[in-house]
View (tube, rainbow, N blue to C red):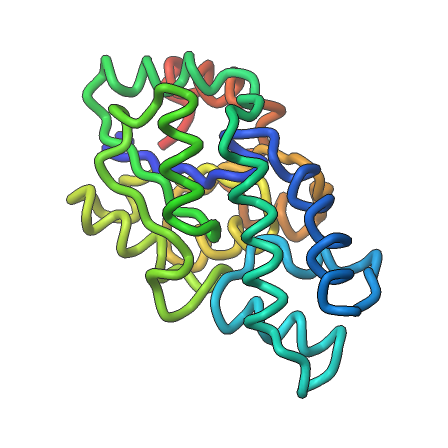
Length: 218
């Protein structure tokens, strides 16, 4: 029986992944750096030192990774001051979990300020007593640290907790932490690896809710 649910944010709850991609050009241009087409996918799902390592791999060990990230997240904060589109089924799933008294958490690589702004704008803040940012843990996904901490704060065991993710690193983190992990694909494709480690692959959050109601998850 599922006793807790941990949500990723970007690409899972909100249709923000395409927006994040647009922030790179102005952020890099402001520092005189070229845009690289492969950067958004490499950066997606990382946080903290992992993010810095990605930037160094593209622009060299001497690049000021913190400056790039400051400009990048500055663009995001400005854009995300306004409501962004919700992913299909989000309202229905969160409302049902709340009615069933199944506690929920958000565990995202985004900054806490961005997470809280999205929840407030979408009128979902009351559903999530636990919020964790990738900047609040030592190791980012695919390390399971953020999910393990979220589960502790929800007072549930990993094997009794569902992780909902769209990214490969997120699915890997859920699997490595011993969670029931469902992939709801967004920009990244479903690979053989994902099929092998995810508990299920769902087309959207409506399908997640359908499976939960039918008792087919957990």
